[in-house]
Length: 177
Image (cartoon, rainbow, N blue to C red; front, side, top):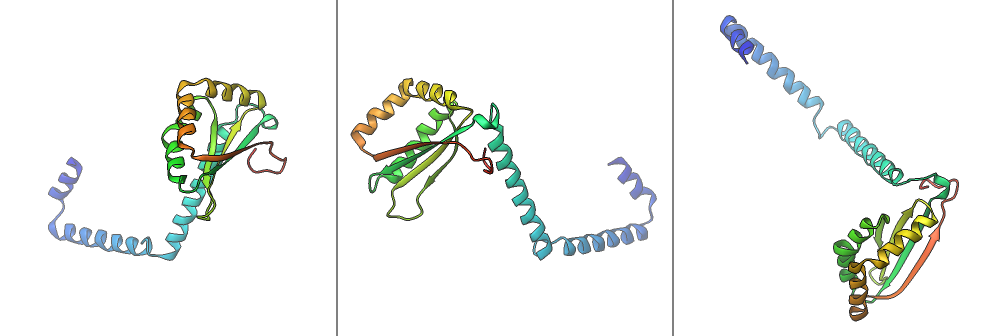
């Protein structure tokens, strides 16, 4: 700040005006070239966003692996929800079950619902370091009193008609291992 003040003291007014005009012209030129409306800038920004998202997903998925990739298993849970009960199901998972799963080291990869309004399917995928870890973590989850309260509430609310669980192993050419 003092340097700028001293520069103003020692620089004649005519030069300060010329410097200000040059800075203004340069900033207008730079703004014109780098404007967000410029299609090249939008393409670079979009490409940068895609790259950052790809890196975040890749690192996030692989950071959950604890042991060798060859032992890793995945569980796919498909809940067939009673008609009209999907909002309650999503709320239950958002507010309660997702927190319990995280508490018991059940690493959820994602939650999905069917795109077709007449299909009442709620799906989520869990990643495990190996089959033994999966058994241990699910046993701890079932013993949790909060989870037992949710099961008791399900018996009266009847949100779910049917549950399908599949344990899967990744192929050697799978991007998610």
